[in-house]
Image (cartoon, rainbow, N blue to C red; front, side, top):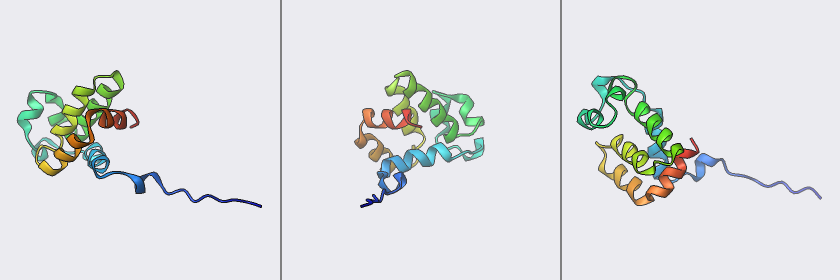
Length: 105
């Protein structure tokens, strides 16, 4: 007897906050498209000119992998500065969950 298990793709099981994070990781933009440039200036000025959200998320992932979850979550939330609902979803997920998710990227 052969058993075949159907496994749903990982993206189908993603929570909305994870989709928000992934959208920021993929969002490469120029300085004219950066939302909340003042937040980039106080954290990662170069990212304002080197890819926008995608750059800041690269820094967030690096911070998470170093164990600096507070900074990783801060950077992640900055990428959603123009979307309060997305920021709330990320906050509600919790720093540990967001940090662990970033470590997997």
